[in-house]
Length: 376
Image (cartoon, rainbow, N blue to C red; front, side, top):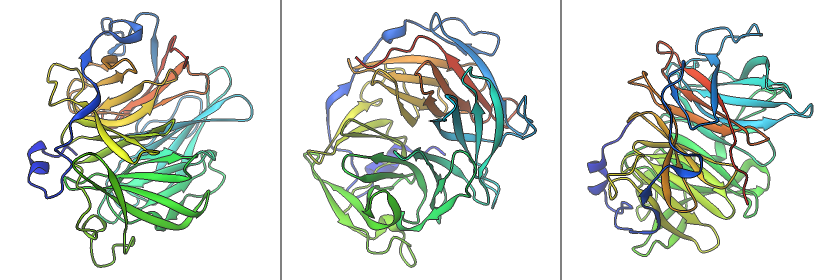
């Protein structure tokens, strides 16, 4: 759900005063050229790219006997031993026990060979994150929400990660070098958190901290006194902590944590070695740029960021290493929806994502195949 830009400016300690230091501040065609006309599915893609629908919400997945979940949201891809892969996707169904997450299993040729649930009994599962040990962490986006660790194969049931806090969880990213998790909170006065396990990679116990940012972007981390939020909401327990307006997507790449905040249309860049956060993209400062309603984030094979739009003109937008914001995919004819769950296949040639309320309202999950560049 969108949060108002004006709200953050009224919040004490809100992260508003920082100026871009390495901003993406230009528009362009990006590495793959401009988008073409809509195809038969309503997808606008660069030349040489093709798309297909791999699952439709509330319908049986072709080639299986499993019904795909409604309102697909955050997702990730996991390779399998038979050289296939699994795409895991959350369900942001708000009904009690009606959310959770499902999975599509592909063989080495890219054909769907199975579909199944990996998490049940939860609600409003929005985003999350893949762990370095190949599990999926799914976040419940409601006031008493928790993170749940899931087995992408479905062999083991999902389990709650109480130590990572009770709040309106959005997404999680994992730093295998610093051995920490970073978390976002989707509230107009949400916070930016990190979790340090007592014994990596066990997420059952550890230290939950919240960020306080000074005027130079230096981050100080403070212990959250009560991660269970038994009497005080987690984000209100440390008065000196900094409010971020509607925390959304998060991704880790080579010592940097990228965070999107939808309320002010920004993407932030936190350098873990320097402990400093800066504004990487500011859609309000540069109104001519193509990205609005920043949401889920993924790292492309060449190291660019892919940011999904919640609303606006329904694009996945590249934020390139050269400072260019460039549309990568646009879904047309689906007003009132949002794009979710971007994730690349193991070989980097396939991109998965969903239109959360496409296909009549239940959601559509897509695969786009093309000559995505590898990291130099």
